[in-house]
Length: 198
Length: 198
Image 1 (cartoon, rainbow over the protein chains, first blue to last red):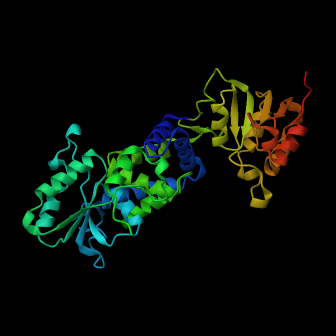
Image 2 (cartoon, rainbow over the protein chains, first blue to last red):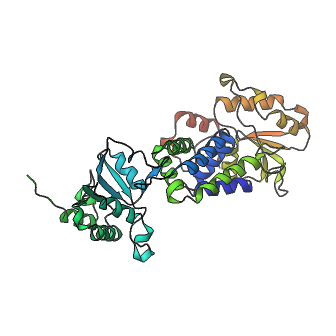
Image 3 (tube, helix red, strand yellow):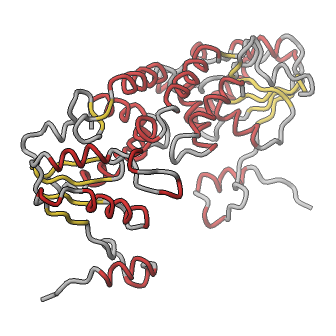
């Protein structure tokens, strides 16, 4: 095809889950199938790039100062769930199992990749916790070395006088997952996380 | 999420093969994962929308007057393969089995959908054929009622004096396809298209 077509295909291929063929199909859709969709997509992209920023309180996506969750008075503002990034927050919201608020770190501590406390949205969380409005901090960080290090750092730096209950989400078998199909590390987590039953 | 985020997600969902979840993942990628990719995508879209147009000879995508195929002197300009749309042309090019040129109709005749000869890139093809430079016209139109009607219209309106050989691509079992798995209409086409063997 033409050079501009190939540059567009190349850019579409950068999107997650899009391969060479899908990018070609999308570019053809936008240029010949439904050319009216192209300017609408461009303006949606520009509009989102311009108006979407970080919530000043929690780091989630927002259009004003606060995101829709921090601004929602029906959510329990005293329970704060700490997540690594916005997609993790979206996954938790999708479960509709949580009525507190969030704090997005935008990463996890990883000395091996040169990511230290200053690179994350950590000090804002410590300030938020020290202000005395938070009763529980739920650490919903990943079940790996970096997640562990980040949890460790947080508990070390929380002012002990604040009386905040700190919990970490459960580890173990995923819903519908059989023991046979779980990997060894998951099984180790599941054994470590065993609870009294009946 | 935010309204602008949702509008972007809605637009990404219009792309072929993209569902609600993939659109969410793409929007998050563009807004938080790799925000640098967003302006590059926008400019690739705008650039393509501005510079890609129709080849004045065959109707394929082009950046100048002629598309890269019509402009390629190593391709046999006397053999013209008639296709319904640009994705069909792309599929044929991908097979690397064809060294002639194309003519893109941008649709097929369909009285039931109100698509008549004037809605297609048909008269340009008839003019091209009448000019005497074409020796063979390969009808690579779909194996359905509309494809059949379009082929019929074309053969009826080609000036009989031009001495152009008109062929239609073969119908039958797809490569790797067993008889057991083919639908009845394909099997009927395959039987009708049987050839002397050995």
